[in-house]
Image (cartoon, rainbow, N blue to C red; front, side, top):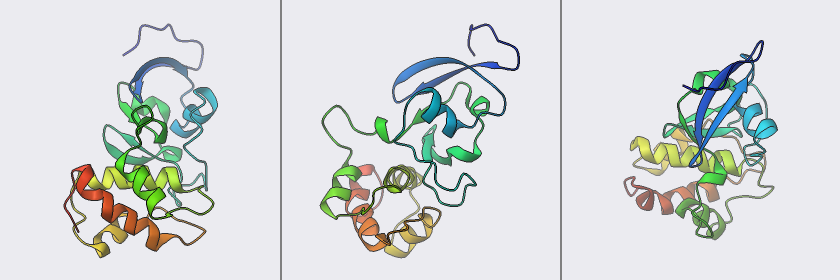
Length: 167
């Protein structure tokens, strides 16, 4: 994808992240999470369990939600990625970000970026049509503070604005 020459033990990749093109040299073992946080300083994506069990690292890859801790950066060559930093448009928050504030859907806030990215991806999937379906579809995103009812309420409110059905 990229014309950047490869250094030893690295591979050239091209990524479109939050509307910006990046040409990078990455080792084959580098996770997408570590690339975002450590190489590109996009620290909104959180490292929780580092085993794909908590969802704190959820980002959108070509519009679909993925656990960045389980995704190798080289697997994403040519892909479009959206992190929590890429959802707002300037000073205008994404409808789900606004709903999270309105419903106090965070306490410590650590899981919030992953929760929001997961809910945006879920809305694009178009399968969550009820509160129970939202809860099931979001079950891979854990909140240690237990703000689940507020998170679901925020998702329910924002779902129609994100192109999803009204629960």
